[in-house]
Length: 253
Image (tube, rainbow, N blue to C red; front, top):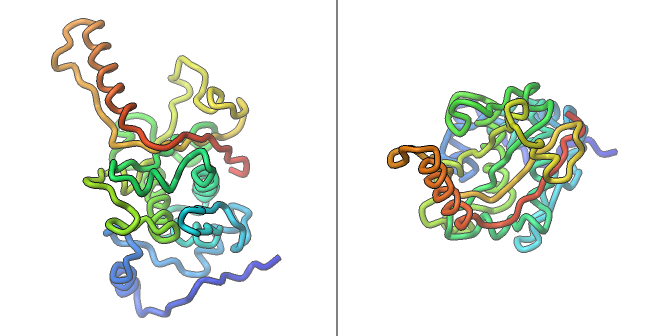
């Protein structure tokens, strides 16, 4: 088993210099990043039980191979904790399945972005927000897991705005798009069960999604009116969606 990291190493004087260097190279999403030191990258790989050279997925249309080492590097840069790594690995494995159409989702002019919905014990273990402001700021897991996916798509998948990413307008979810399912408050079967994953264990669903549309009650004065307004909003969002949806388990959390 080869446990040695193979990525190019760059010696820089301090974290501030590293952040500026990474930005100049086009390796960031425009925000500061955490310098991915070898020690930190190895911690992420060890937690997930991956070797650096493990292939987690491929994007044939771009001739790109995504290894565990590259995923760990970008997860560190995004500000993740090591125990987030299994969720990120599961997300990459799911999105690289042919049914998901990752190339189409990340190259379209429509501006879709991979939306991750996590359920199972991992939600509480990692403190992934599913409640108030779940699409907004304030929770590290939501923010950094979603951001790690974006950095991986950019730095490994080649989804650079104006190059392979042809989104006309984009949307804030292209910085990071990760939420959890409120299983206890959900009156239906968990999403993972609906999508064919075992009832016990962790699940993750990925979907290409435009920016979320928040329905409001400006015109609806009755329950029926509010319902119609919500349905109209969801219908618009559904028709805008691109790509497929694919569940994935995170067995090693």
